[in-house]
Length: 85
Image 1 (tube, one colour):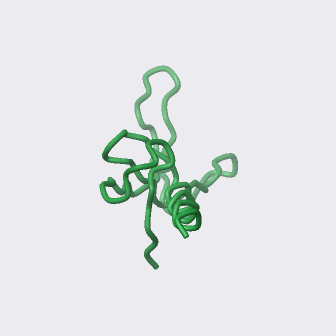
Image 2 (cartoon, helix red, strand yellow):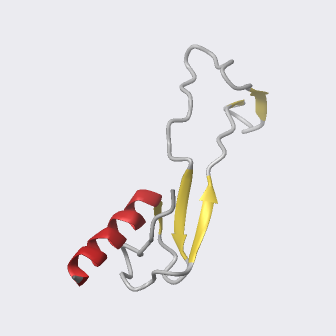
């Protein structure tokens, strides 16, 4: 389902956005070098490794550069449309 967006920061942009797909990669890193030691497959995490629970998509305003969750842009558009009437 699509919804109109409006930037919650600049409050004027309703047309120019960058959609950012969040693709989590579960890894175990060496604490000294930062090198990836192990990559986890889906559903095969260690007991102490929580799965990613963040949003699937973020949105960036292509006018002011704000990056936020998609819901913030949708809610701002709903607010603007409600006050327009």
